[in-house]
Length: 284
Ligand code: G4P
Image (cartoon, rainbow, N blue to C red; front, top):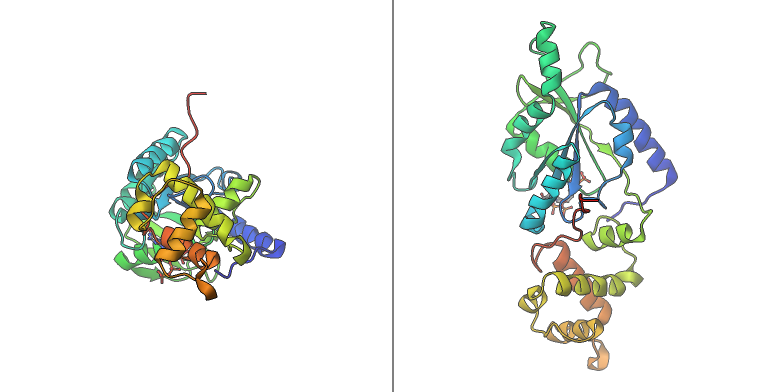
């Protein structure tokens, strides 16, 4: 992971997005299905006001399926059009066009009433780094795909990917930065590998992940590693180190190697399909 967040980067990214957003009807926001709120920057609501909005829970293949349904329904209740996808394999991509059309129905009806026909809907993809924006655009483009050049009325140099006569996608995504007001947000994004975790914190992070997993997904850790799930988490980590041969000279457990292994397994979904946060209660 080589993303570093400097205020200058953020300002530039935000400015570019504010420019690009003027060109589109719709914002397709990607978030990580494993932490759908932490993986968003709520500023998008301000930047994207007056635009039609779709939220896609990407990497749904690595998230808890039951939670995917709950999150979709949460975002739908909040007024978004939402779906779960796996941009890498293409699963869920077929529904995207109809979701876009549905989200922009009001505009299409308005156009029709005014006698405007054959004007494609224009969309941009946005999300935090590493959420899968390029993968999504490639997957979208794979099916299309005529790239359209400059057009009158369109900023020079902008490339549009034409899905069909109905939909065009801006080929450069809008980059949002994560918002770390709540320390848990940083913790979750670091666990997912969406922000750089400092080497020194890997042990702490892996212990947090293991605690979360054994509390919320009992049996997952013991299926992956030959360990009991009870007892102190540090002891679990030591047992993982021993069972996987992560040892220092003299045979003592190498905690930092074991931590890196656990984090790598977690991030690639090898421990199981896990979601790190539940939708806030709507009843309140
Ligand atoms: P970005 O443009 O938003 O920064 O993200 P990008 O598309 O580069 O995707 C970041 C990583 O997430 C890539 O993995 C990509 O393959 C993976 N990814 C994207 N969508 C999905 C998905 O729906 N499911 C899963 N499991 N992974 C997804 P990488 O390890 O950086 O590259 P590579 O191993 O694919 O080459």
